[in-house]
Image (cartoon, rainbow, N blue to C red):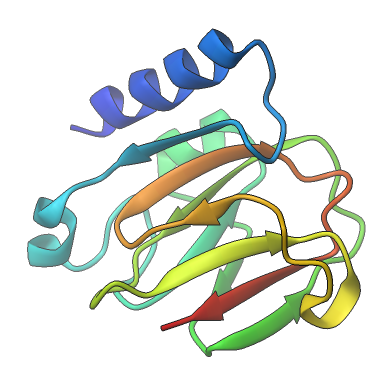
Length: 127
């Protein structure tokens, strides 16, 4: 299933011709909720992976579980962001610090988003 998610996310991103913040998302599905942890990300967390190899190996570089804004520092290039929250909770990429200008990619529960994180300065988790 992990390979299917990876292939779907990459295919969608390539189909748009960009890996920008509006690029791709792919459902991990309800199976992720039943399994709890998925791709090294605990149930109830949003995790960011530095590259595809880290996603495949289940090694997130960042983990967040509290609602609210979380600032990013020194993060550049394409990253994989997986929302392993339940109950419809979302994560959104924000261009400003502390959750300002949150017009970037919205990542639904049990979904992975692939995005160029260079212009992103924070990520917001909300119900």
